Amino acid sequence: MALQKTRAGNYPEWFQNVITAADMAELSATPGCMVIKPWGLGIWERIRFILNEKIKETGHENCYFPLFIPLSFFQKEAEHVDGFAKEMAVVTHSRLTAKEGKLVPDNPLDEPLVVRPTSEAIIADSFSKWVKSYRDLPVMVNQWANVVRWEMRPRLFLRTREFMWQEGHTAHADYAEAEAETINMLSVYADLAENYLALPVIKGRKPAHEKFPGAVDTYCIEAMMQDGRALQAGTSHFLGQNFAKSANIRFQNKEGGLDYAYTTSWGVSTRLVGGVIMTHGDDEGLCVPPKIAPYQVVIVPILKDSLKSESVMTYAAALKEKIAAVTYDGERVRVKVDTRLKDATDKYWEWTRKGAPLILEVGPRDVDKNGAVLRTRVLMNTPEWKQIVAADEFVATVSDLLTQIQEGMLARARVRLNKNIVTNVQTPEEMQAYFANQNIFLDEAGNTPTVAFVRGKWCGDEDTLEMMKTLKISVRCVPFDQSGTTGKCLMTGREATLDVIYARAY
RNA sequence: CGGAAUGUAGCUCAGCCUGGUAGAGCACUACGUUCGGGACGUAGGGGCCGGAGGUUCAAAUCCUCUCAUUCCGACCA
Image (cartoon, rainbow, N blue to C red):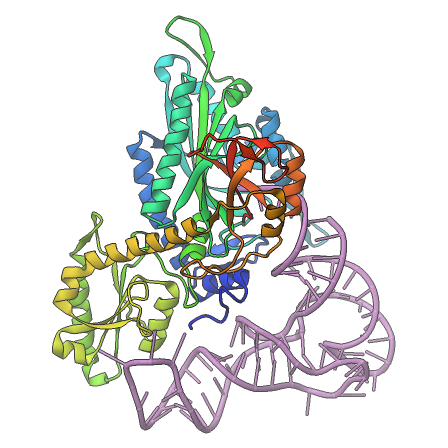
């Protein structure tokens, strides 16, 4: 076992342990903020690259809007400001002056600036200038940015005061087109999650009390972590005409009348990296799905015989070139030779903890035999995850191996999700009993008795909110695949038609 | 922002009760023996004990304040 903490022992501690052991990120001296290190950021960069292409393919273009938003802009949408008021970083001064040996803020701003927690307010203002005619619509933009929300309990990748994300913003001439855009982008997120991050998700709509502040409807994808808790992996908001009215995004229609536009916004964040860790990590460390792995193949040279070091390094470099010439999923295979002056075993364990999909050890014996030792714990059930391969054969099959790992990881996560959506909880009493238990780690087969997702009816009444709070659960979403049947609300026993997912959430 | 706990070497921690020259393991450096799943030996480097005050001949240790972290709440992509 490569980690000190295990999932079954203490899941939150294990999560921290994976991040430090894989050298992905650490807490910064700046309170509540994290330093993202190369392996952690490398994964985010892959996600960003893939999603950026998809955003462009679906007709959007990238823009950049200011980090600072004048307070008055933020105030225009009443619900919006209510929703975010408690977690705003506010810039109030423009200068520091030395007073009694200490630097103190000086020169107050006429109008305070909010550090963006999200950009609807400032982007809506731009839209109002850009949109005059129905011929200007739709406007479809996206920005990659950092945002700040003053969280009280930061957790690496899941909830930090500053985080990186992407926020798409669009404006449309009519309701149906804007709503279709909202749903379409949710599908793009689901595709990203499942087919690249290997995170199976449930698509649905948020109940009214969980909506984005200022939205008409919020849609989401929810993933299940290995402790049975839910992670919101992406959201897409249909904003109706709310922001158009507060920012005056109006256009002249074909008939000559003035209409307010319909707007949408949608985003995913570095939280996805947290989702990858909690879905694919094990007690050895992280496992990174090949499509988002910064390196898909890592070659570790065994340099114990100094006389043969040079030939091993030459061999490793040549093997790297052959592997890098192979195409996987439309891109060249990302391969690295770890040339650092460290013990081979140290390097091997480091890449194991980091979860590189394929690790190749090459030493003097391999040079002689034109081979390598392949290690990959996703594909191999042996205790050593070890297999001797011929170099040419590896090069010929590396693309297939990566495909198998990618698909295997998705299949494993999907089994876990499907096995742990409980549908046989029928009454409020059973619901109480079910969630009286603590969340614990779900084993590979998903058979461990645990607390995960309950799918059942919800009446939607106000008094259920307090009841859910007591159980520390929430309605994660109203899934798109509704049964249409009538039954009893699992909170109150009242007649209800909505099928919902109840769970504890991150 | 409420409740609790903890701050000593890069990391994990002992020492504190009962004040008297700063400790261990891991990690790091050098050399030697090892060597394809976490080797070992020897010798080293590294800390004004979170910070500021106070008590005292003397403070990591006692007192006060402060800052930070972790956990539990509230909040949350």
